[in-house]
Picture 1: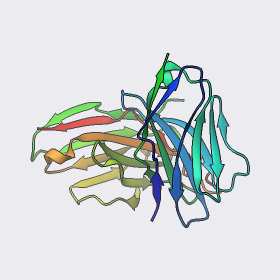
Picture 2 (picture 1 turned 90 degrees about the vertical axis):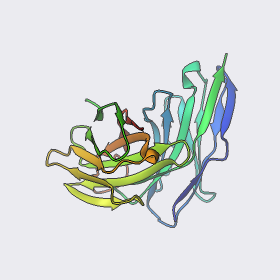
Picture 3 (picture 1 turned 180 degrees about the vertical axis):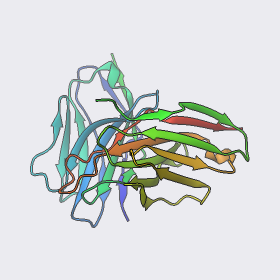
Length: 115
Length: 117
C-alpha cells in the first residue's frame, strides 16, 4: 500500500529563516513521483515542486528545494528565506508509475511564518 | 496558459439532492482526477479519467460518479447527498504523456466547496 507520512502537524518559523517540512513515503513501485503542494486558506492547491524517483539530483524551484533521500524514503521540503505569505498548509503527495494519475497525500503541515 | 477551472465555486444543497460539478483542465492535459478534502479524512482520491475512460477509482460509494468529454472536460456527480458529503472537491489535470513521469505533474483547480444541509 502507498503511504505518505507527515509527522509535523504544525511548524513555526521566523521571517527570513529557512524551514524544513518532513515527509516520508512507502511504496514498492520503482517508478514514482513526489510532490509538494501549498494550500492557503482560500483552498486552492498550489503546485510547488516535483521529484521523480529516477531523478539523480534534488529538485529546486526558486526558494523551494526537495531533499530527496531515496534509501530512507524521505522527501523533505526546504523553504529558504521564509516570507509571511508562506503561511499555509503544506501537503506532500506521491504518484505511482509514469502517468501519475492518482496522488496519495499526507495529512499536511500547517506552517506559520511570524515577523 | 489558463489554469484548471472548476464551477461552481460554492454550492449549498440539502440531503437527498444530487449535484454536478464541472472541471476544465489545462489545455493539452488529457487526464483529470478528482479529490475530496474534509477535515476528518484529509485528501481522498475519487477517480481519474483519461481519454473519456475511468482509469483509476478510489474507495467511494457508487453515489459518486464521473465522466469525461472528448475535449477532456470532466464532470462529477453525487446523487442522494448525505451530510458527510460536505467537503471541498478538487479537480486536477496532468498531461499524462507516456515516456516518463517528469512533466506529468498534477495541477489543481480552485475547488468547489459543497455544503449539504
